[in-house]
Image 1: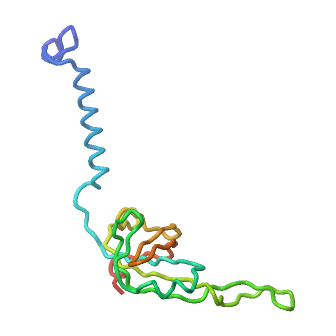
Image 2: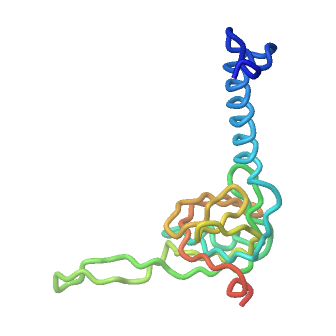
Image 3: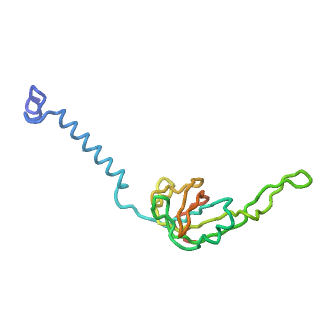
Length: 164
């Protein structure tokens, strides 16, 4: 044992063993951080189709929602290409003459569905597009050609199903 460690705890009489342990820990932390920041290297992308829903939008805004173009998040990260925009009147519950609440189509507001085709990665059964983890129920502000709107993700499919 005296050949490896001397009486002052130095390895081969030159380097302190505690210094080596500290150096190894620092290098391990740096490597771990680099892997987490870069995603661990090249990851295969797959087609992802995400449906965003915006509810109770003023109907006057609907004509400005173009059906084609690039969709981004508010940070400017590209999410994908807009495939379709569908608007239908929002339902409003109104009190009828007989005292019952009944749902009627709104004459002033629409519910809008945006279908976006993206390229993303899938990990732990969650699709990631840009910096967004695309999960049903997530609230996302999307930016399209000439508009920005608050939406909720209502559907996410990937792989061959996204191309159908």
